[in-house]
Length: 312
Image (cartoon, rainbow, N blue to C red; front, top):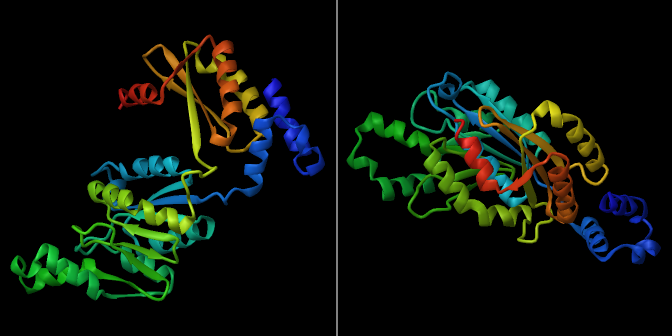
């Protein structure tokens, strides 16, 4: 409670520079960072494919992207899964781009008739698609399709090089051994393949460019810190405490989230305490209180992940 009171003093006095010398040193540092920190990058993920909706394949890209954003201090606000419908793709991308800074799409950029992501997204931004010479040249150099395809299948193969065109379109070739680009529109929408191996490799390789575009540094004040507390108490037994805890956290930062994860059949639950690293001292105090009030123990993120994965 002492630490929370200090944070409440920050909320009352940080607008009065004459009072800043009165604050504890770590609080003063936190206030300075709040006043100068870069804007929070808001992200969304659009998974495209009838095969995801009909259960043919399991989407793993959205989970990977969530972890990717978490590691960079990017706030992932929405994950949407839709089918291969042109109007739905166009309208969904337009909505997401109006509400977020960084949108990735996954799927629908292959050679078959239902791969319509490029043209659908282009339509949403009043753009057209045309065969991209650089992409075609990379295809010829890396895949040598003329040696393997007849005229008809070659035409379909080059559908994957038929990309949105316009002054706000940029193709990022982030790996020399791959011809597929990350197509970006307005430095906001980024179109990626749905194949998980490619999706993950491209995003990993794109990270330096992403940091430059969004001015994300290693000192990003939006980086998250998360702690876990394991307790034998049921969710019903801990819900009142967690509600009260969340209520005390909100005045400090809306980025502090208290969560509960039941592990059915294991005889325990875990409580997640998540917030920005700039509030780490406050988060640690919350952990201590949770351990005491819930007769709990702290566990690592790796242990929590192991418990969660065992239920899959």
